[in-house]
Length: 334
Length: 255
Image 1 (cartoon, rainbow over the protein chains, first blue to last red):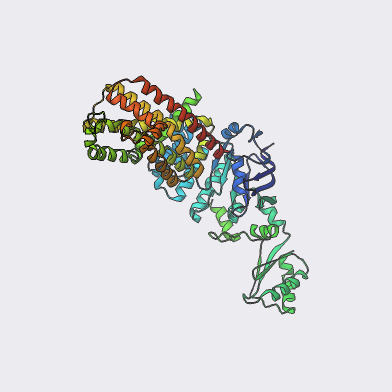
Image 2 (tube, rainbow over the protein chains, first blue to last red):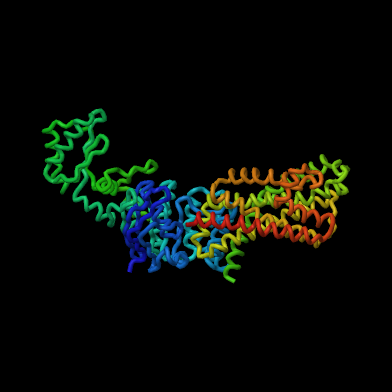
């Protein structure tokens, strides 16, 4: 049985904004499931409904067999939640914050203290444990907040953009914690706008945009679902709309080319058996005298999946879309 | 039992903050102290006015200052609520398996403790300045209890503002804007007999007048039970309105 199950979930805010517009998904115990989407896609709204902080408009959200609307208190015992903007009392020390969480979940002082010490070790904050949390860096705050969500041994962990605002080093460290956590049996539901994060962490993910799930699957399946390799033809910046349209038409006619899309001054196509058909594609471009500034052949990324299903690229200014190589290296290290 | 435990946890967290950040204690004390020192000097000759009815202005002023301390502290309560919302702490309380009532009662208990400490400090300073308390230690205890109860009722207003605006500066500003005119429209700084008649009428409908009357009786006259019961009745009425409104605003925020 699924541990998380959302059915026809709708949230309309006062004022009429449909932040979540009929979402369905289910997550099995032990999975890492992610929502990948831009700001405003409905990720945080969905999470806040799941953690009982927000009432839904219609539909159901069931966690471990319990309806979040009907028996929120029982849901609260089973879940941990780390908000995007964290929840930390700056006047208390790191350790005191953790103890407070334990106490809020019904632990005795001693139990909470022991758990706090254990978690401080896990997130490498032992040295700073006695310092006021107000002095912590953002990376430390994110880690502390994650630990706070774990104090009461939740079965499901809800993480809203767990690594937003972190530098790459801190981000990778956090991924390591999360993976370890998942291996210990905790189901994780996370949201992210980072392609690499979705790729590296999620066993399965849903691409969400404008309050709806566009497609869902494992990162590998989603990329394979594009049906080939990505070829991107970039024209000179000054080329303009005419040549761009011309290029699009030429590429559409090449054998093995599917789903042609135009983005700024480049045209992307999915090319079946990329290597084998690339020569045909180049010959076609040459014959049509397309002014090519750059030609790329690459394995598809989640951004290509995103582009295909939403018509947009998922641009996050902070972080460049990952290359496959760095992704593999990271996996080896962690 | 379970509720008591939860209230204790929330209360303990706020107390720890108070110890960690002493400015939280001093914040509401500064202005009452200033008023106590300045007004008792500036208006000292007022006691010579015919019809004033008190030996010196300090004896007359101290109860008002104790009340003012509670009112100031009440507005600190709303600001704390905004801080907790901004810091994500309110969300942390809300997703813990706690009764909703425990979250509010824990906060009220912490506010009450802070007000009691602040009132005691102000009373100590007044004593050092020469004020004497007719009803003795027991009377001082009664003063603190009365001031705290009134302060809790007043804190309801500040929490409504806090929950509606989610803005600390605005909560502070509206607090000052509400408290000051109401304070001066009471018998806090001038006895009823010396107020212009229209102001005297206004003062009769002002809850602060009843707070000051009860405290003033305890300092200067003794156990005047009518004044005390009237003050408690007014406090209860005020609390019924403000705390209901605050609870409603809280429910709206958490749904």
